[in-house]
Image (cartoon, rainbow, N blue to C red; front, side):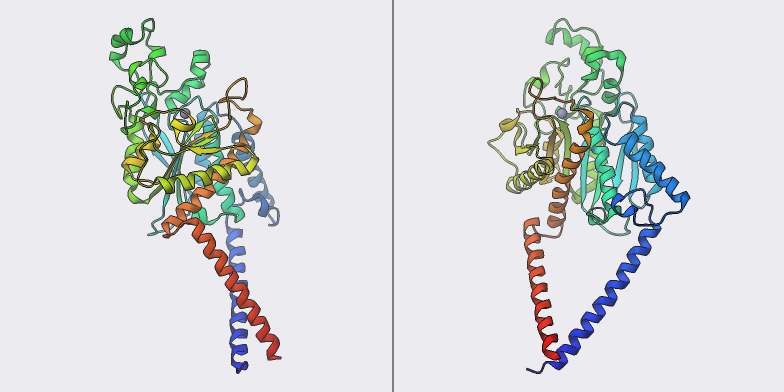
Length: 433
Ligand SMILES: [Zn+2]
């Protein structure tokens, strides 16, 4: 075999590769110098900053990490301001979508859309919402952490493609009226544990006496459990229909609540790009799939839903050693109906549609129930992030026409092929001398 032409060819290829690599590295360094340095603590210290820039970084670090992250939220205006500053500082990565006058008391939805802006590029969408049950107060700071972490990952170069190739819609507070009740000290313990919205129907008090004698006052009997109000087997679990005073009251009819209808409309408008839906709740340390109301029937794509659900639970468990399980609510929790995730599974035909119950694993006295120590909030954010990265990899693989497992195998194959190629080239070069 004549080796010389092959050696020349390889030298050209390797030389060209090295030059291309250098050029790419230079471009990346240039690009990174142009980008704000509020994120990416791993890379930040390596880059010389002007005093002015250092001051600005310090302000952002203070704002990001001390005032918002790792804290229970008592005043949602601070979150709104934080989101506004993020969007103003990084408009190519985060935009705010405000939907005005959604709630009974006129509050808005503020949705953070994260994803590297790209004209004429259609990307898959992952939707995450938190706080549909306002008393589950770990969910809102976890959503906040996810927003922070996706941006931080982008700037530190870890999982950068998750913002390049996916659009994330994160709604940290899907029940702002109820959230306000939980932070209204004048409403006492009942307010702090508020689960519903605050809708008041005139007929409640007329019929309420029959359903629930003794509760005739308007205040305790206000509100609808929004996660029982979606039009997927609405009212199938009969308890949800009986007492408008109950914490799980499903509403006077399916999709009676504007919060419910607004979420439905937004998700419907996304069409086929909606690739995953995650509703965050507390507590139990479980990831659940559909259906929530029955186990002897399953959705069409149940096998795929279950496979990825188990991977998400495993990734969350691995992050900090907490035990998270995957299953169906009737098996590992309790049956319920009219929830958001089931509606997304059914009406929008989304395979990766999950309800995520965060820490703690148990209620008092064996656990902390809804209120874990504030010092553990970042850990919950980190483990939830690990689960969402797994989900995102599956979304991308499905978008590209294969499962993530197959994609990983293909990556391993191409790495092996590449190493074999390098070995052959090395031998060829040695032989050329
Ligand atoms: Zn809940």
